[in-house]
Length: 535
Image 1: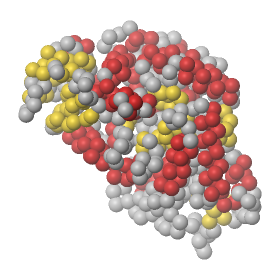
Image 2: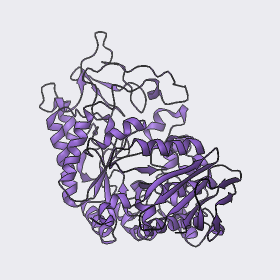
Image 3: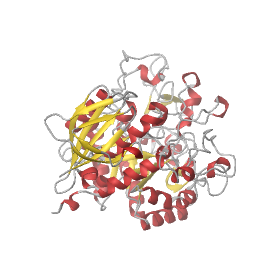
Image 4: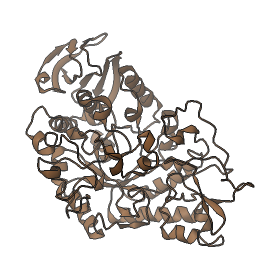
């Protein structure tokens, strides 16, 4: 077998996450939609990504902006029609772009027909499709489990005199995945979209899907601090990540395996030792359990270098790594580490071994936008306003050009735009060799051209309180040495026990490109380089 055939598209490629409400509005109602995404496919092709992952577009009352689904096989009119989706799929594929959808199997909307039946009476055939429990003798909830968005995870149903469980909003009741009928129904949802021709799913909170059979109380979190979400008061050891969940994940993988070249990506906020178990025995789990370390770790060289090595060491045989800097639930990278270090972060993301995912707007340096309390839309922010936990600042409209509302819409946008969109937008940055967009496109092109960067091996070289450095190699191809300065101060590198001789191929600043390197290298603060080594 030739080397080129040993890697699948999702291993060699780069994924781009689209939050559809905020990408492009085609009908001028202030909210992005599917025809809007179609309008921007040429941009995504030009940028150099290989696949788009679209956050939920299904029918929904929008209590949690689409993560509360009332019909898994219908398109919300806000985003368009099924014909629009079919056109999007066709046009994306015509450009060589793969399409991933967001599957939300842990919970439905409380307006889903399944739940309406389930709550209609205790003896309804779908009663056991959800998690219903009697109150304790004093009338209180069955246990102490908390909801991610605040308060108890149990909601009292007056009509049937039981509580139902919701790990998120009360409008998002959790399905009972121990019920074979639920399993069959959701696996059929997957087949519906695979039959349409989508290339994979990102699976929402996959580690929440099975709960402790005995519904034991969660223990207190000894590290909880008052500025955290109330959910963190307890350790969710019984409400998430149960051993039986891997049987469900395996079922999902078997469905994906019925089709050719499909990928499953699991959303999993767990320590690396637990995260890697979601690859499954002999790769029977999800293809890519999302690795969120670069989202959650302090931006410090030793911490980052150590985390990369720990992850590489923990991967099962044939387990393929993946990396992300941002998503719709977390502050944007530039707001976490600053504009200069965000450029270093781009080099890191696109030169580490594994599949990178880019969150829309990262490539132009979009930052979190301050949303006044009276304009907050996010239920997490509305439920916990005193803790400033709204996710709206990272979900603002894409900044396309210098026109009003940055070319996103001519109407009032559903969330306000950043103040600097006149400078930080695609149109301006396409013409600027120093822009973040130019850097991302350069890195994506290089990654596509060089097997060492796309599929090569990873070897750590040296790290200290400032530096992270590593080698990427692929047999028969050029090798690359990556040196990143994660500090604001100058750093000095001298090769030990090896030779680092070559030319800077790409860097955080264009001035560094073409520079000859001969075993020593001095970088200013916030600089990073990719060196093509001499053979």
